[in-house]
Length: 229
Image (cartoon, rainbow, N blue to C red):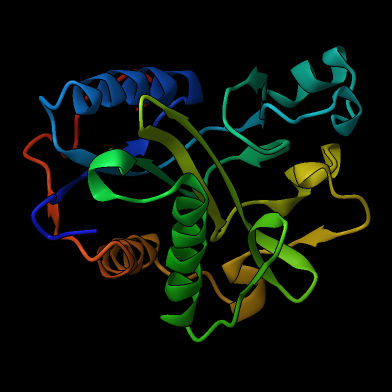
């Protein structure tokens, strides 16, 4: 980890999940070719369920027709982990990093993402915890952040999703992260009021810079136009 390898910050607003995959693929290819700096994207998604590489079909509790009626879709991805939900009011962090250049092991990258979420929560006087063998962040026995990544050619994609002020009833349709009998929560539920998303984004960017010991600077194209905005 070094400040000689700064990270560009992109505020992508509310972007359709498939569009965000295209954005990540393009950015990861540029980082891999060393024609672009590492990137941190902060954004929200319209309602969508995503299934990771370790997902099980039985963890989606809705039939295809019932799922269609909700207005959300199920997208298969190459990230680690199981099934989760993304929607408005949830802050998503995508880290496109060249781990080889930074000398960071994949397992340490996951630990770093957990620490970033923990530090973000702490900025709002919330005490989270990481659980060995269960990537993500918890408050008590309730999950507040899901984490899943993929790594190709030493470059990461995907990252973390922090429940800020999202509608948690969407999680009733799934077994979140494949873990039975455990609930989900949000910053709003824990605080009793919704924190401003801009404040949460600022705290997340600051935590990222501190954990990765790097400079995070706003990209000249921080509000890139893309489908789904």
